[in-house]
Length: 383
View 1 (cartoon, rainbow, N blue to C red):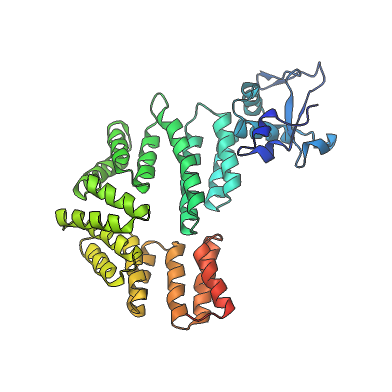
View 2 (cartoon, rainbow, N blue to C red):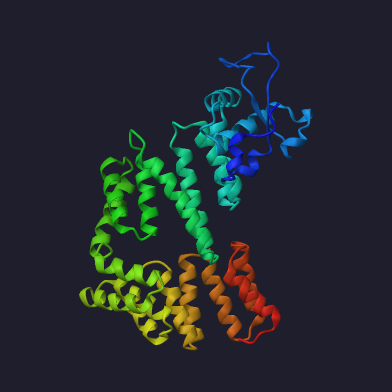
């Protein structure tokens, strides 16, 4: 009996999980046929112990423990020397496992049980390397997790999740033959990352190879919008990158130049407002965001940014109206709920503010802004 998996020593993702496995060798002569698959007693079987491998109890040796052990090897060490054997074993013992685990993983991701969802999708990707769907689910889960961390103010963790999503999309986009849904999903990933050129290219590819007419049409519309709204303009990209890198003064200058060239493009004004707001220029930010909304700004971001400027200007009633409108667009946006709490706090309505902050934390337990405001409220600090 081996005490642990060699691959667990690199301390990468899943290393702690792999340390809970032990490898056993079945007695010679116990080969058996399972649905056309013949077991090989010479190949060590990983067993999930539920505890440190050194404390292995023979009572842990069940079919479910062996299947769980193989799935964990396939999840976290898919290049293991016996991976092909473990795939065949699990697929023979549990022929319906793809649908069963896919549904379980999606439910876990929806409930934000991120670690469990990740392991399920990784296991399925290792178990069915020929199937792209588990990789798609994995990439989407990483994106959702990145957005949740962004909402919670945890930018480093958000960036880490985006990198994992990016790695999943790289694998998907390298598949032959191409898997069209991967192009559509990846396009939105790069759109969210503001890599508009890459998003445009992927949407164009999907429009050529996709078989979902609604998604094909949507891809074409987004490509057209990217061009008409200036997203592909080098000046826009320069301004955005400068502001994102905390070089607001330089970014503002570029944004103003972009507005001069594109005075009827809403995101030109949004970009300028974003820089003004980050510089604490509340009235200038307000005017820019109002112009963006007049020109048709989409989503809740412009409304939220405008509300922040209005709050700083003392216009609390107007700020609340903007946030309530934004919340109708995105009812589960914790950032909006936190800002409604800030308005209540500034008005001295502490019970109402506490309700907002706790609601935001229920939606995203790691929301640092909501937690900080709640702590401030509980400490009795003045607005």
